[in-house]
Image (tube, rainbow, N blue to C red; front, side, top):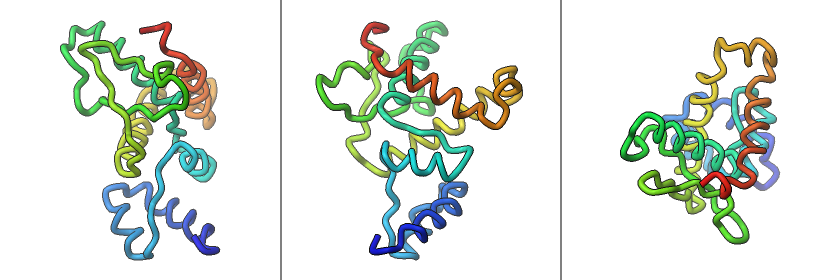
Length: 161
């Protein structure tokens, strides 16, 4: 960003909350918004309510959604909770909990698609912990604690498929 990284981060902290306008906000500043596993770690440090969305978290979320869909008799994953998986190094199977008819697709390194899944994850996880004993126990660290659990679950979901 040509020495403008601090400006970029300030813009991110202002823009992420109003995500429907994020591309316009960045275009006005002639900057490109980045959304990938690495940048979500930076955004999570910047914003308490922003979760990391990497291959492990994505895999764990998709596994839990698949299990929920199976338990509730769904024939497919509903679009609003159809999270995208991240590309992974290596075999590519360790972090893909897809099992017919519950298929999850990859972001294919699209900033917009990655950001969409990341924001959905933020909203879902916020609702999942809000007002629960989990939130009472971990307080302002509840999102980080849940994110850490998802990170561990998502290491290898192959044995769960």
